[in-house]
Image (cartoon, rainbow, N blue to C red; front, side):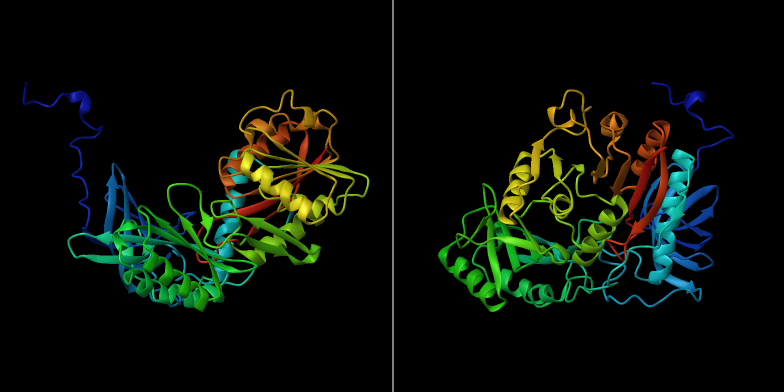
Length: 449
């Protein structure tokens, strides 16, 4: 084989630049922010995305990944800080991968999320709402009612690592306190490592999930049967912390004591929704309740109306809606969730809900539950959005539509389709479901023209 490199592999303009090695340290001047909250700098024709850097700052950053003209890095030292920077409230900021914007004041976090939503709507749909609504917010800390704890047996060190995943790494960071967890989970989090390390078979542990709603709960994933002594330690720990014990072995997660259930309340409607580990539940209880209130206010359901709830999950929106209208048709892709939502309706004494399972990534053509049409529609899709559903939404007859989104890009894409069908974007705003992160959730109200 010839040692000469073919000219067609040469980059335009001369020799290929040497790749930036992982681990290299580089001094950078941060010029602006990306939508995900990372600082952006430019060196030698490359764009650097730097976690922990703010516009106007000079930082020393370590390279995490590099490809072509893009380098991802993490701030190691701030050489010249801007006045905007605040001291991160959490001692693990910068090492734990969970909360990436703690150095950024909360008001600035909200402004960043608002800009992200506005930019996506303008770029992908070419529209802005008639009215921007103030961000829907809750507590900046102590908001998270669900958390997954990483657990890994280090064979060489013969040590059990317990904590959260590190930033841009599979390493596990030991966490003494997590400021974003709700208060009832804090003592469980602090005592958990010692408990897990005391078990006879720590090698059999997978991960741990913590929940808090109507009760606290600890779910332990294990890859081999647990001995009676280990089970007794777990039961005593949960009893001490007034928490349910759930175990997840080869099958589905099961409560250690039969009859135990997990749930959360929607107080304004006197509703309690039960769920099981693995079900989707919003982690921010305060913002979830405010979100439901705002969605119902925007949708303005009337007593005699028939309303459609797409991607209904456990009935988070459907049950409060059912208290205000003649009939709610609720549709979900996962059969187990449909059954859980139906059981929640029965348990709360609501008989005007009708639940259906359907693959909502496919067109709605021929769905019997859609034949009679609707007065209003609410949809809360996953990150992929609801493009196939939205393409046919105009055929359902609804004049009002509330779209709850966890991805501004797919919301903007679907907005373009709704506008094409004659809907007008009347109102939009962000939902601060995940403070201290760049994750953007949003709500939009559309009305037929």
